[in-house]
Amino acid sequence: MPEVRDLAEKVRSKNAGPFWVTVDIFCGSAEAFERIKNGLTTKAVAERFDTPEQLLKRFDIQSLNVVKISVPRPSVQGTISDRDMHGAGWAALVAEMQIEE
Image (cartoon, rainbow, N blue to C red; front, side):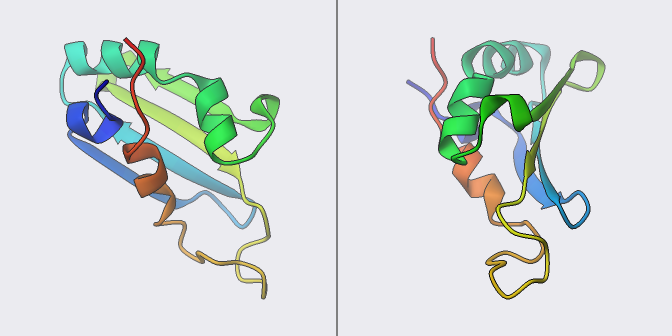
């Protein structure tokens, strides 16, 4: 099975305020968008981040060929327990996820 990074043009993550991180998957084509949209389940992403599925926010933006997923941070940005202040490391965790066929 391919991984997200094999199909996507770019995967990035960033802060979405002090309580959320957003992961953007730029698919590059309509075909890649459909494969990622259908093969990367919200449930699988929730499990990857050890977060209840109902807390994730997912936006499949067909006109831009982008899948956007917002995840609540495990700790508030900038606190002593925050391990990734800018949220940049979350992209790698999604990029290596497998796409179900």
